[in-house]
Length: 175
Image (cartoon, rainbow, N blue to C red; front, side, top):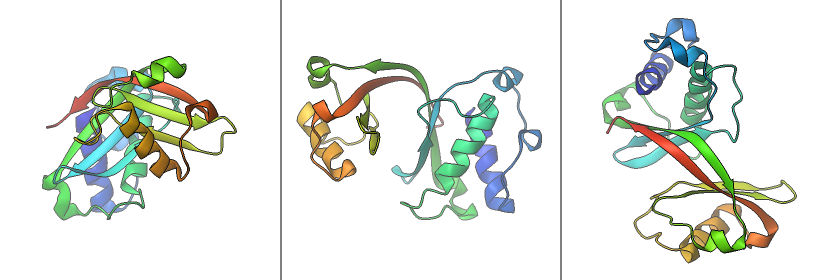
């Protein structure tokens, strides 16, 4: 999968076009039959510079999911545009979402920011945020989660106003 994401990035930067799965070398053909929810993170100089994800599978197969999420990551307006000259400076992380655990108030307090993802969805569905595990060396407790979530959501995070999930993933990286 990492090889496919690398191909997608290179193809897009060289052509300014979104590749189809027919334009990629897909060694593991079983990926054309799987449906997984994935999170793509691209690092440059060890800083997160692009990312994209979905809560559920959107595409018919994993390869199309990889294409869509990689392209969306490259279009992430929060960060500078990636150029062809950056190819040798980037690292890729793919998180395959394996389990979503709906949390109650007690379990939320026990989350470990070094190991756990957290996904919060406002009960009126107006806001959503995700925090990746080990995103910062200073985020070590539930209070740190609350502070970061409040900043990302642009309001004080109160667990009772949100649906909260712990996300468990399988991680693939090229670093």
